[in-house]
Amino acid sequence: MGLDVGLARLIENPATAGVGARLVRQRTVVCAYHGVDDPARFESQIRSLLRRRRPLSGAEFADCVRSGRTSGPPSFLVTFDDGHRSVLEQGAPILQRLGVPGVVFVVAGLIGTEDPFWWDEVDRRSRAGGRTGVAAGEGLDLVRALKLVPDGDRRRAIDELRASAPIDVTEPQLTPDDLLRLEAAGVDVASHSWSHPCLDRCSDAEIRSELVRSREFLEARLGHPVRWLAYPNGNVDDRVASIASESGYHLGFGFDHRLTRIPVADPMRLSRVRVDSVAPNHRFESVVTGVHPWVHHLRGRP
Image (cartoon, rainbow, N blue to C red):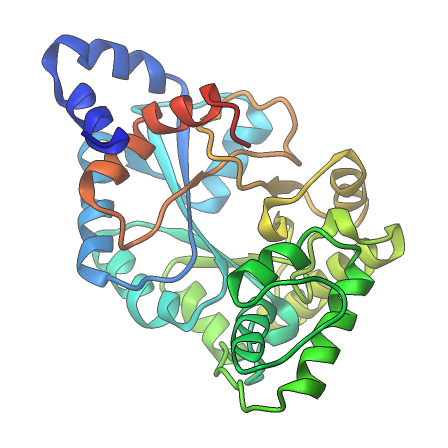
């Protein structure tokens, strides 16, 4: 029996239901999605959350963090990273119909372009024969390797891949008008940096440029302050968190597969659980109840 199936059976067992309740008391489930690849399953997941928890908007969650208090039944917040078009075309209509707000963290430098996410470009160009001297590997193996090198080396690798595999890798991105449509549907738009580097691999000046440029770009197009940030790839350390705060952000979201306990220790290092719209029900349930994240960390995984 697989780990997730076993955890799901544990959660569903009436004899252990009280344990599950204690695990989530005073904790908010902040879900970190990317795209919405299976709309029907995504809707099922949100309905499952609604049966046991109340949805929060980004502003309500920010108020909880600021005050250090929660009220009412256990809660959840839906977030999306990167700004995939499927969030606008599939996710937002479902959330709006169910009365659930959300937050999408967008890569500001891609808005209004047809430039691909850099990891998609690396994957496709390397599998098309592109090569780089920065790191070995192909496809997602090379992507993982490039997340570990200094950011200047990552950018050099992408240039080398473009030169050695000059194929078309365009990808339509959200437009400025799309950002307004998302907010009209109840999905707040926030920052995921300018170009999505791993910030802990950047210099102080590069971090500041990535974060300030993104915030100012979004504020000019949305007409309101942008004070929430999701760290690209979830990579954050004390240096990154400090510069993010200095750059005008009030909340910083990680990607650490933990439930969020209120009051939080540091508003610039907030927890989220990793979920996706294609996950089978038993895995999704094990994640949002806190059992899978607990086992995940018990095994020493980040």
